Amino acid sequence: MTPTEFVKDIMKENEALFKASKMNVKKYFEDQPDQSHLVDHFIGRMVNEHMNFEEITQQLHDNDKMPKDERALLAKQAMDEAKHTKMVREVIEHILGEEIDFDAAVAREKELNTAKGATLLETYGAQDDEAALAAYQLVAEGRAQAVWDQMADTIEDDFIATRYREIAKDEGFHSKIGARKLSKIATTESIQDKVRTLVSNMRKDLFEISCKNTTEAPGARQLVQEAYGW
Ligand SMILES: [Fe+2]
Ligand SMILES: [Fe+2]
Image (cartoon, rainbow, N blue to C red; front, top):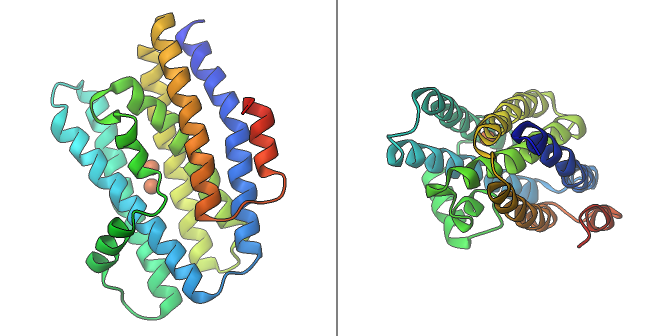
């Protein structure tokens, strides 16, 4: 398979995970969580964005040999994640009608170690493995786009929906960074096999995270089980 075909294939296969995640998000918000659950939920998302920011800036710091154009794209992603953190914070403060203690929220979330995509970067050793990072971007950032879009669709409050729509757009761009990189490096069968294994583990982990973070919508698990042969 050419690298381009390979990336297309992975993207097509991701669709079942994205669809199942959207089903979970839709159900979670349609069930109208009360204010305190909603705030907790968004604090989790805010901290996840902040962790993405920290992870990407660390990457930039550690990989100073990375080609300049790739560094520039990652820098853009880091800036976006910082912006997302701020936007979700604004949403939380909009719901509460008061300011929150950001540092305390981050510390508490990190201690609770609740289900988060950002911790997966570490699990897969994506810090020092460019194929793992690219695969992660393709799967996790692509899923993030689907999830933020679903929130923008389901949440009726315009203040929230417009912000989440903008976040979704950025996440789509981040997944393209992964696609671009992967189509440069997935040149051999052994790299492609390695990425396939990684991606299939990521999909499994991300589906479980989706269920824990939101809810398990009827039919969601069956959809991914059938698509991936779990
Ligand atoms: Fe983000
Ligand atoms: Fe992102």
